[in-house]
Image 1 (tube, rainbow, N blue to C red):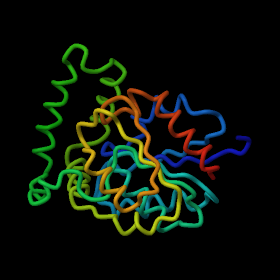
Image 2 (cartoon, rainbow, N blue to C red):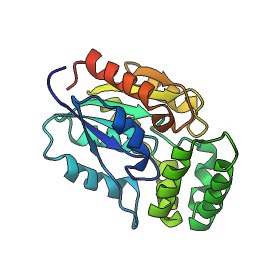
Image 3 (tube, one colour):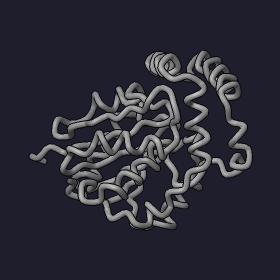
Image 4 (spheres, rainbow, N blue to C red):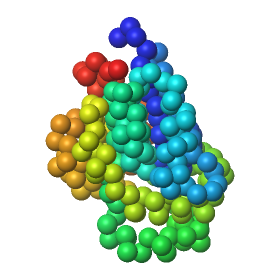
Length: 234
């Protein structure tokens, strides 16, 4: 491809550019990434984050938007608000309604103290030999320093309450779902729900856990590039 493709990257629950690091290093030169980050404090629900993203992409004439996990609903919201600008949407390990339906009745209990306990458990798990690479441990440590438990709790409650099925149904941009083979966070039920609404969605798989964009960046880039080339995007 000769023309440059703008690829807007919306992060997951961490809201930072940190976990996109390996992916960014492997993108070909004709893909121009635009990484959006979320505020580290304040209200972090989808309604408050969307205007921030819209301001960042207003000047872009044509772009593809990738939403990772928590960022997936935001990608569909952006496509709904900017239909003439968005030529493609990539949903990576993401969802259009709560990825954990069983937790929806308890979403208001998701507060900073609970998130702090969960984070502590995850830190301990990362210390298990062979569980994670040194690079991944460092990246997670950086996100934990940047984003506090209160902010993560706000985003978690938003994810448990989200419903962007209407935006998906109305989406006229080309769609791809990038699934991790061992996703322990977002189940295949979320993908099945998306396919039931938008059966034209192209599905690609990357070996790895929920963070496969980080742990398997080469394959992830291959899938993204194939999607962009096959669909002649933008």
